Image 1: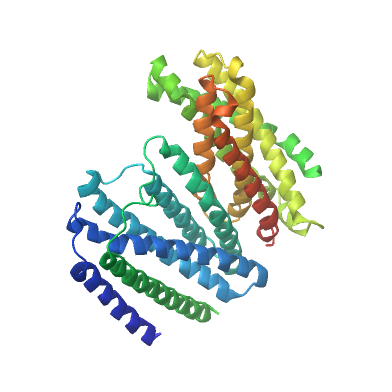
Image 2: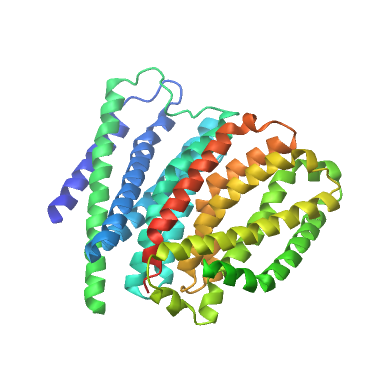
Length: 213
Length: 215
């Protein structure tokens, strides 16, 4: 755990240096673009986290291992935090670039729906006193939510394509190598951070469970 | 199946209250949006689904509460055989309830807002039917989950509404097109999405309901 924490700190520092120092400012957007080094890795971590919730939920229902439940719980928490970071950084980027904090663009909408869906998940966990039942219900919700992600994705894209196509996945001019490298460093750093947070949180939850027992 | 009939019989009290609620909703829409017919007509698909969803939330939320109040919850838990049969039965009952309320709302909308819904009716039935199945499938599952939870009246919509966003988007878009007189083919992609959602939701409901009814 210690080692993992230390490695994560180093990776994050490297990510900062790469993102703020090594990578050149983008031609049209200037320095504002640097927020991408935070934004894109966060949304990546959020999706990974919710995928982990899904798998851990199934594992819990199948095996009834408390460890799987704790993993789902921890991963959902971290996922919600990173979704929040994604939305916040996106907003900060959107203001100077699009001239508005918020617009009902397809990607913004689907990420914000994810955010409220998993907030509901955490809310449900908090509202149930019986630990075993809470774990079971949460697992069911974790599965429903995961199946819902593609539905949300398509419905939101169709809802908005009339007005503007999603801007991120469409192929554009290739990014310079330095920028890609900086982005990759941050991807690794954020993934490590995710693993570290989840490990820490799982550990805490286990301690709580032991203290309660 | 016996569950179904039982619910039928029982839901008369729910149905009366829901009918009254639907009527009140129309009043609220009218008062908050003003008498401007143009504006009301523009907002109609949204208002219609707001009505369906609000009454659906109330109706579905009660589905399992009745069981608990009547101490039937334990009986449900002890019921032999496949728990998914209970889910299907409850879902059927909820669907019936929602369809009745939706039919009433449609009539009320037609009367109060002076609309001629008849030409669009067949297409409207398809859209509303598909949307309602998706809504009720997850609604039934979540209603069972939140029955035993603190602050359930609050938690039920808080869980259900975000999950229902795809259904909501699809139905409102499709309803709008249908009300404008477009053929169903024009909204085929939305109908496909709804059908996919229905299949996924019902399947997940059937598969996971066992775990909800464990204790």
